[in-house]
Length: 231
Image (cartoon, rainbow, N blue to C red; front, top):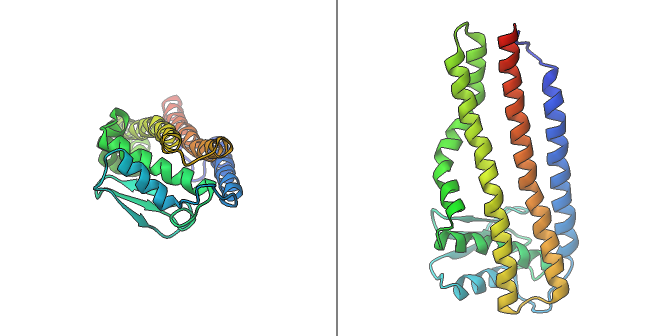
């Protein structure tokens, strides 16, 4: 039986909320800490990103400023690497770490990194599926013979979970490329390398959290289906 408020939802929602909160707090604390530590090279995030791109033979990717905090991203559609206000013109250890990470995504795109290719191909389906999954499951639960809607909703959300799983190796690989590129360029000291790894490691935990939250949500949907079958 489906209730307006399902108490069992809290069993999955509370852990998901706490995991996300802890991961976000961790990345903000670490980024804030190393944003106050200046690099010996004095290069800004934008300069480091351009340096890495050019050293890898990538000359058609623009590096632009984007408003917001930690809104940094690489857009493969327009071949634009966008850096936030705390990264673009900052010469902090945190800034060059984040900038190098985003440049790592551009290198992945340029070299057709398999996991990134697969992730990009899944984006349209996942965008639609993640929005339709719960409505389809709900319709199926309300209908007497709604198994087809339930199964379709579960399938679509399972693809969204798979997307978060695929995102994890993409992000970890971009971070590895970032550290390697900074070392090859000779723009970081050993102590700065350790700090950058801490920044990128904290950022990686947000993706681990996303995987955990997605799996918990899928388990909740499956519990709804199981209770329907038991009724």
